[in-house]
Length: 182
Image 1 (cartoon, rainbow, N blue to C red):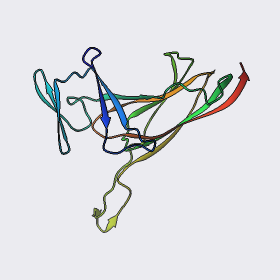
Image 2: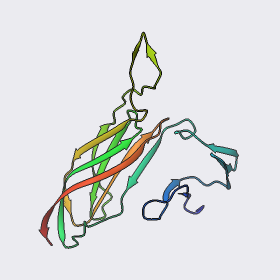
Image 3: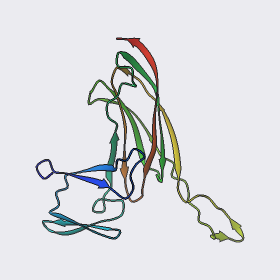
Image 4: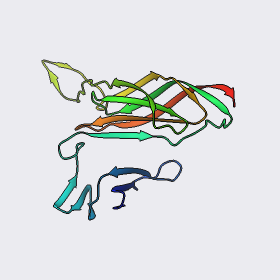
């Protein structure tokens, strides 16, 4: 979409449970063309060819953000009081992660920020002086954050910076209670 300087990327490698495909929006990216070769993605740019790889943007970190659609928890005439947000991430490595909740289509969000665990990753067959440590090769973080506010329509999301390592959001949960009927 050159007019809005947005590129929509559809991951068609595997359909989701509902038959749809993952979609991401790459803002400020206006390539002249794309070429996919096996596991490589090339972009034709005005000043040359760019290759999509790694977890940086031209050697710099970039912000990853996800926000849900607006929802009413199937109680359209009832106020909801959000008590807690929770997220499960995989592959994070010490980056700052912010859980967010907003109400009534407002661009202002309540945000709870924390640093994801940076633990060590050990590999099978690596040992020193006969002592070995083994663990999974992917870090899993479960975070919970208190929330505040109430509203009829809710939106949840998160932001984090990606800087050289992968990070995948596996689950985003909201804990709310029913408020007064509107």
